[in-house]
Length: 170
Image 1 (cartoon, rainbow, N blue to C red):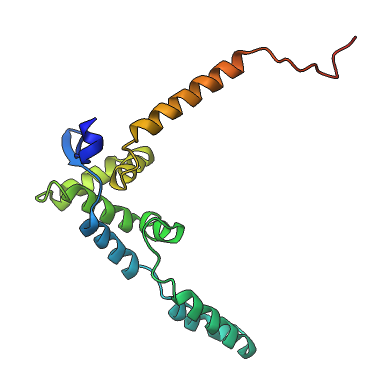
Image 2 (tube, one colour; image 1 turned 30 degrees about the vertical axis):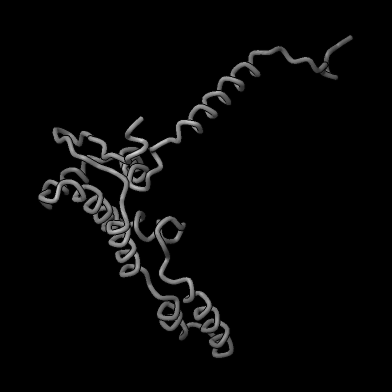
């Protein structure tokens, strides 16, 4: 219970290693955000690279849309585009893992990090993402409500149906 209140790090086993992991703070989130910025293409740059393939009458419209899109650039952590840039790329996944693990293990070598990365499956990586963004710490009240809803659903599925079917022969 105290873990929920203090956001204490958790010990997770990676092969024969036991390492601490925990929710990322502003410093680590800033590192991830900078990586996303550095690895996503500005909308105006992307449009300029493809203008030659379009009719000159469409250039103005394409550039105008790129300028509008530029207002929300770079993509941010937690958005579909930000997560795509960070997590759909092996280099991004490795950077995320590096930030996540080196938060508590500052002396973790690149070689050890590579070995850990090779041993992760999609579920393991998803669990780390959940921990990083604090989604694994359930609110005790919410957990109680969810358990109650599961019990009610189970009871409701056991009750015989009270409605008569029109296909039943009489």
